[in-house]
Length: 414
Image 1: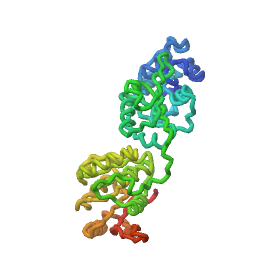
Image 2: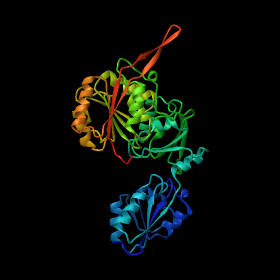
Image 3: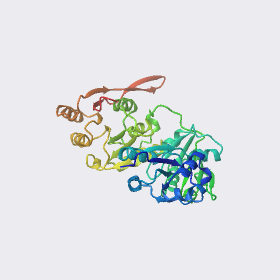
Image 4: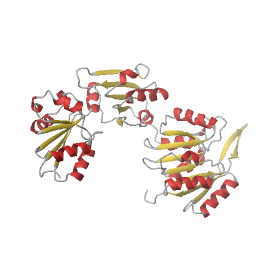
């Protein structure tokens, strides 16, 4: 239990050099009885007169910090040093929640610092309030679509190999128009800021503790996810036609942070449109045909939809290792429709399911699934679109294959 009125200050110290600490942060360090933080944070304040002689703990893990506080009730004012700003991709919020839960008698305060994004923006003489922000610190994050859609995107590149992997991804998607401004060891005496295209910069230029600003001179300003059929790389693989695709995507009722399975993905047309529906949507394109897998990869690159993960294999076996879906589209089931439905419902009972059926055999299998309760509250729509084709001076309507769209399940509160 925390001693009554023991005070814990969570202090954002900026990039790391003491010269970028705010006066408020310095005052909190001055009044503290002990200092806690990762070694780099402690190193930043060791040369400060206000920190001289104070006991320190080199630690960043929340439980260890709380254990230390419990065992030292003599410290009335405790300073926990954190990099950057406490409100921007910081461990401050997690630590505050932990303290509130485990040591409710303690008083906590947050002291903001200068975020690396704000510092780099000032150094390259630009604003950051109109920029997208993506953290690649210690995790794999989809950011290509974000860079494609914004004039400015800041990438936080802390963590091993984050800079190298970011540069490789930008090159993979051939984003040669992007200008990168990379700041490394900001605020330190050996601070370095480099600017150039993804071809000008090397992997070593983005190593270590760094942040990058990606400037896109011609961002994709579209607000609609719909893509005409002729825009896709097709090959000899069947593709869900755009009229059917539009209704199917609408029936999926995609949500923020959706996890989508596109089963029998073909060329990846549904996967692409689902991924285009939101930067934070993850799509698993499941396809067994090697030619189709290659086309999905090409279309993912063309439309810069890095939210698509390609799964080469046959459902339901290929679904076993995937995270639970929120939405499932079934464009092809290879005669295993009911097995696929059972597999996705086992993972996520409230999943939203939309399937397309062209053959009467698939329609029959879908109706059996309805009868067996695998497609709850099913809604069935038939689409039979026609397109005009030119014959001399005239135009004749040519019918497309009729398609049954079956939609079912999903949460009622979204």
